[in-house]
Length: 307
Image (cartoon, rainbow, N blue to C red; front, side):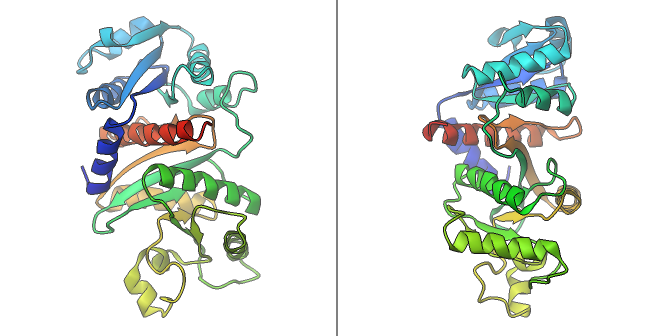
């Protein structure tokens, strides 16, 4: 485990144990991650789904099901709704998707009566620890919002700041990235980046430092910033949060970091009353574990703020 994720796990172990409601829990990979996080002393879990299928999925997994409450619901949609309602009723601190379509979980999350709406925009934050970067990199939004407007980007940015704060970054540096680092009236991402920077300077966006537009190399590389003579900017190769202009950019960046570099990562959906873990079946055990601990840290921050 890399240094920063190791730190977060150590800090999470010292917090009050968080409860995870698992929506449609009959998935061996999810059960394995839940068991690992429980053994680490970070979470307990309530498993929603078919009890028979959960017991079948647990075969071959190092998990003792007698340690968990199982809410036996055969229908996947009903199980997802029940898991989200459990969090809505403050019986659990976060929800995790099991073997069920993401859209089914999101429909439950967005339910007006029993969901986790806050009036804020929902967005995904991917958290990467890249070898030799010596800090965490928060990528948003690579999975949920497709072509965000300026107001969308403001809320996506603010959601990511919440996650960064929860991970111990007290004043994250936010780089709204574009193809170039100068404002070009024909390139909307540069106009949005400049406006977000102004909002931050005038106190409309707080808890962070925003500097954009920035090309990606200038956001993460000190050497590139020095070479291009941009070291006088507020961010010169030391960005913590990368705010992407659209989902294509974010998706490609997310997958490049995951597949072409020595990284460790996790991710979660925020802007909700409680964090939502939406891991994929293709995600590794480590990614699922890290997503759980990130959600635990965000849940703790929300609890302290009375949200």
